[in-house]
Image (cartoon, rainbow, N blue to C red; front, side):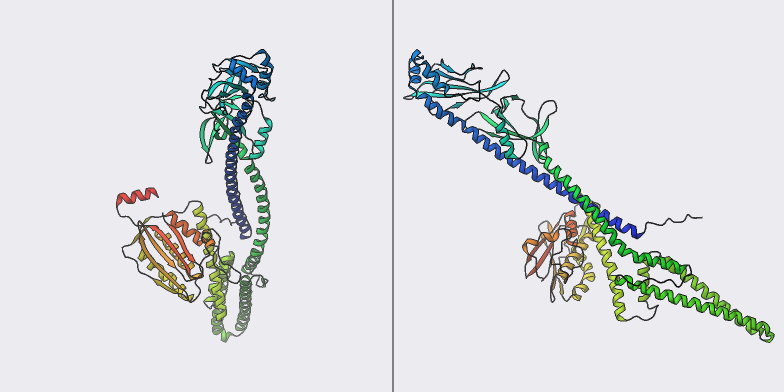
Length: 636
């Protein structure tokens, strides 16, 4: 004994569920793609701003030398300084003047700065500043211009970063001495805040010597050099920090006329903050849209399936013997037509049942009369037997018909198809040409719906990389000849002419025959749709180096230049209006080009507004060597 088959979920529930799932998948894909684009834009913008600010900062630091040279020239012209250099020592009467001149080069922001006056042999003649010079003094630059300043590399002393700047003092081309300034890098919080405002992100300012041995912050704190370079999201990043280093993006610019390099680093995590905030907002909006879409899907599906539910219930009642049950006629045209046919069928079955019951009653009355008339017994018995046989046959026919009808009507879509076929065959009486045209529309609508579903399913398989390709050598002319019987009648029925310029019989392409045939059908169908009668669709082919080109030309209105690439986007149909509907959902060209590219080819378009369009399918030329075939398939 077989177990009873468990009924599947009703269409009334499946339809909104599937539509909601499709909407959820679309929204998920939109959120993912949008987040990826926003993150890429944020990365590019952050990198560009970081480079711009680094350039500006390097230019700003470069201006330090000329400013220091200008101030040093003023000190060099001081008479007391000149006398001290000429005498090789500072006279007691000039001590105050020399110290005041050197102090004018000091900055109030750095208490650790020291300014010294050197003689030509490198001795310190005078000094200004509260601190003492640290580290080794640089050598005196001789034969240098009197208006130049030499900036020396950074060095570290007692955990702080210093540098020397020397300005020579000359007379008649002879170096008399130099003014030497030892500066200590100090914290500049306002500068860092200004840089952060310019970049719009959290950044850190670093300096280093050109040899990379000393790295320091803007505040003069020595730091380790960034390490472990690695490309992340297309950007070069480094690890920088202490115990737990973080990934940073680093830009560097050398400072002209100095041994320094300015470096700005930005934590990679700060670049992702804005995209993550965008993602959060987009997810909330998508959730709201999904909820509203689910409600709308439920309302729409209820409107579609409710008449079918009523029809199924009525069919069950008729199968149980209630021939008075009727279905309300209303709704869309096809559903109203089906309801009218069902009501007519129920009326006919009820009338047949009533007639059968009446015949049985008459037969029983006749049998009673025959019992009273002994002389008519044989004839009455024979007549009664014949009547009973007819009644049993009619009753069996009725039971069989009701069982089959109940089975067919349990699935509304099968009931629709069954009644269309019954009506077309004329089993319910002759039908008018208008009714036959209506039945043809129902069939076309069913085929059109299946075609749309097939296009969407193919597109989903392509996106999921689940489509299989059987690559082999395909004779091109034979393939086009096989396509012609399917498409030429449609082209001619649309009022256009069709012409095929024969190809070289030995011309073969490398690809999947079924997929190539579908591409050719799509291209010729599109050419037919957009060719205004009397138009012409021309198919030709030729070899182009290692590829084969199949051209489909039409004499339609053409495609504007700005829309040439859009026609290959999913769900895009150019020129679609309510008064001029186009069949399909806009996936034909998308799927065709994807097929071509998966087979190593492509589809290109040449179009001129008012003169028509040419769609060219490019595919690899067939190869016959065993080694070459294996190599090509491995590359694919």
